Amino acid sequence: MRALFLTSLLLYNSADAFLPQPALKRPSLPARSGPASSPTLHRAGASSPTRVSARPQPSAAAAPPATTDTKTLIRTGICFAVWAAFLAVGLFLGPNEAPDKNAELIKGLIASPLDPPVNRLIAAYFNSLGVVPLIYASVLVPGSRDQPVPSWLPVRLPAFLERAGTSLVPYFLLSEFLGYGGIGPYVAIREYRSSVGRSSLGWFGRLLEFKGTSAAILAASVWLVVSGVGGGLGGLLSGEGLQTLPALWQDYKEAFFTQRLVNASSIDFVILWLVFLDPLIEDMKRRGWGPSVDEQSGKEVWKPSDVLRVGAFWAVPLISPSLYLLLRPPLPDGTDE
Image (cartoon, rainbow, N blue to C red; front, side, top):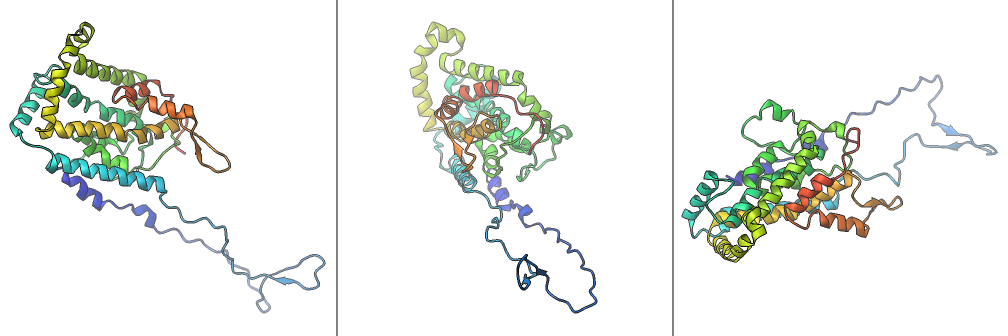
C-alpha cells in the first residue's frame, strides 16, 4: 500500500511555473503628418542631435529567471532518498523471521494502549509515533498554506478539516499511521516560508500555537519516556524499573532483528528525529530565533548561541522538540508576506 506514495509523487507536477503570462499592451503613438523618423536626443552644447534607437536594449544586469535554490534541491533529494529507503526496508528488506509475533504485538498494543502486555520499551517508542506527528504539525502548519503539494487521500476530507487553512492535513493524518512514510513527501516538496503572521493561521494552526496544546504534548512525551525507561514514575523513583532495563533491552534487540514491525518502527522513530532538524530551523527563523542575515551579502550568519539553541531543542528525541513548542516565541502579527 505504501508504494502508492511513489506513484503519486511521480504524477506531481508544479505547473505554476508554466502558466502563460499576460501580454503587455503598448501605448499607441499619435499619427504624424510627415515622414516617420527615429526619436532623437538633443544634448546641450552638441552640434548635432544624437540618434537613439527606439528598440529597447536588454540590460546586462537583468535578473535571471527564478529557480529553485540549491539548498531546497539538496533537501528534497535527501528526504526522498530516505523516504524510499524507509519504504524498501519496511516492505521488503526488513527481517521477518517471526511474523506471528507481529500480530501478537499489535493485539497487545490495541487491547491496552496505556499498559500493554509487551516489552515496555517497544510500547513506549511505538506509542510515541502517535505524538511525533503532532510535533511535526506544530512547526510545519504555520508555513503550510497554499503549499505546492498534492493532496492524494482517496476520500474527501470532512468540511471542518478542509477549513483548517493548511495543506498539511492529509500528510498529518497519514503520518499517524505510517510515520515518516506519510509526512516525508511533504517535508521534501514543501517551499520554505520564513515570514508568517498569526493572522494567516486557520483553526488548526491556532490550536497548535496554543500553549496548552504544547504543554499537553510535552506531558505526553515525558510520560512515554518515564514509562519506557522506568516502568512508570514509581518504578523510576524506587529504582526497580531501572533494574529490569538491561533484560528489556536484550529482548528489544532480539525483536529488532527478527520482527519486521519492531524493526520498521524503530527506524521510523530515528528518521523522524533526524529529519526534524530542518523544519525546526525553519520555524525558529520565522520566530526570530534563527541566524541573522548579513545586509551586504544576504547570507545567514550563525552565531554560537544560535547553534546551541538549535542543538538544545533537537538533541533529545521527543523531549527536546516538545520543550521547544512550549518555549518558542509567538508568531508576529499580520499575514504572510
